[in-house]
Amino acid sequence: MGPSPNGQGTRVLVVDDGKTERRLIALALRGVACQIDSVASAQAALLALARSPYDLLLVDQHLPDSLGSALIGLIVREWQAPPPAVLLSADRSAPTRAAALHAGAQAVWPKPAPSGRLRALLRAHAPSCSATPATPLLAEVQAQAFLLGFEKGLERAEWIGRWEREVAAHLAQLRALAALRGAPAQRASQHELHRLRGSAALVGAARLDLLAAALEARSDPASLAALREAAADTSAALRARAGFLPQKN
Image 1 (cartoon, rainbow, N blue to C red):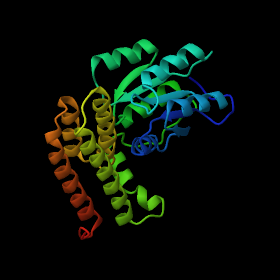
Image 2: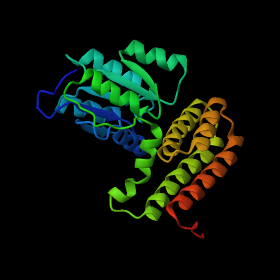
Image 3: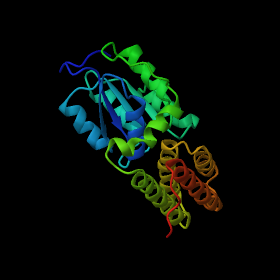
């Protein structure tokens, strides 16, 4: 993997339908001299690859229109010089890992993607990328993410409110899916839990992340109440850090 032919430096394509996850990856690679593009589906990824070359793919496993491992396999088979791909997934099962590696993925990493690994990957395989000195800790990424609202000209209250609405939407969807049965509903629930875990990682909500992971493992609808409680506690902590009281309904 080297500099792109267009001279713009090493280019990374992130394929993930979760806005939170895409923001996390962008923050993790902050200070690295490369272009980062993102798309939300397998079809959009194929169109992006057809338009211009990329040097590295970071692909989520659960996409709206495909599994990430299947997308990687298609690219490996059909592209004359396929870029290296890393599969990112909260699903840490052996079958998922085996399928991705068999399809041609260079590695399978858990979500949220470890920022140190991402930066090391670019430094090791992309000479055109040079990282500025930084501590590759998830806590640093989370702190930067908490300030993301300021960088976009938003007030803290508005940014936290947006995070709260995002989490509330995940919980509402999980509650609706809990009333359904069958494999499609279970897959949809796991996908929603992946997105909830991404939202939790964005603000460093370890308890919310652990509860979501446990619910994903055992598919226990009774745990939704614990998720709601953890989300409420996280919101209170964020508002306390921001220096203002919780808003009244």
